Length: 163
Ligand code: PNS
Image 1 (tube, rainbow, N blue to C red):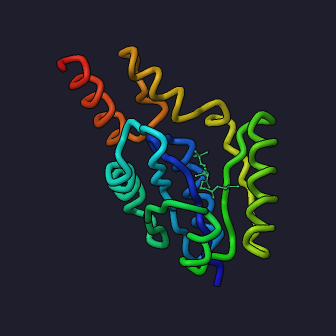
Image 2 (image 1 turned 60 degrees about the vertical axis):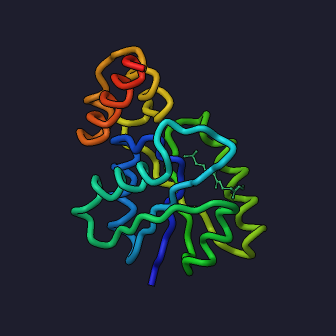
Image 3 (image 1 turned 90 degrees about the horizontal axis):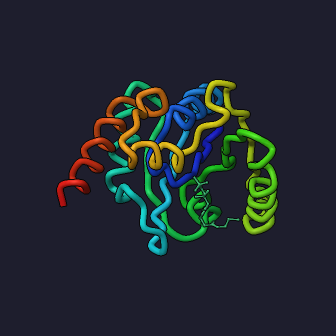
């Protein structure tokens, strides 16, 4: 049985993430999306909001579960009995960081391997950071994130403007 983890910050989940999730879910029995609860960063969405948004956009994929984690990814993988970590690769700029993480995680975990899915062409430029920047300046993010995420982001930035 292949039980894989797709970890990330997902602040917020984009169409690029969703594409990776759908393609990964087809290739494993169970896919756990691990949402990083990093107390040293200040994300736009709380970890509970990110989990809720991911649940909403993956509700039609039966073998996907969403969980949050803090601490080391390899410890979370062990706790979840997952044998594979999934990461998306967009461009060569992702490669060095991803290679470093994959190699470190394999050594730390004594063998949990990382498998990479190459981003689909239409999402190869897309990042959560870019999506947040566009929305913060009042631009449309409809082409970059699922509708429920766009609505929540527009609402968030509207409430910042009011305060
Ligand atoms: O979406 P992101 O921010 O690129 O995801 C990065 C993530 C969550 C995969 C990475 O920061 C992570 O695994 N953090 C947990 C802490 C950890 O295990 N660090 C060592 C990795 S070598």
